Every structure is written in C-alpha cells, then in structure tokens.
Image: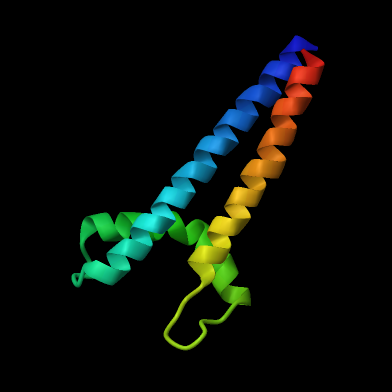
Length: 98
C-alpha cells in the first residue's frame, strides 16, 4: 500500500505546484495587461499562453462585463478551491494508506 500512498502524495505535490504556477501566471498576466503597452513582448506572450490554459474555458462561459474581465478572479477562486479540496484530499488519502 505504501506504493499507492507515495504515488498519491507525488500526484498531490505535482498538482499543487501546477495550481500555484497557474495562479502566479494569471496574476502576472493581469499585471502585464495593465502596465505593459507592448503586446508582443516575449514575456507577456509567455504568461498569456500559460494563463490561457485556465482562462479560455472560463471566458467561453462568462462574457466580459463591460470593460472588466472577471475571469482571472474566478479562475483563481477555482484553483484555490481545487488546492484546498482536491490536493488536501489526496494528501489525507496518502497518509491513511501509508
């Protein structure tokens, strides 16, 4: 059973790192959209592509409200929920199996 526990623990850590990277990329993308006037800057494009993994599905269901796009805020809430629920559940399951 320790093999399954180690697998679940590694999966939880990997998922947590992915969630944190996505949250940081969304925040940096939002900041770049406010302050960086040059749209085709390589750093901006990198963070736009990275954050679009989560933001594009949300933007399909949630149109912008006037000039305000609240999809980054909703994406961060969803990612924090997944971190608090799914990752912690995987950690608890791994502890119980070991």
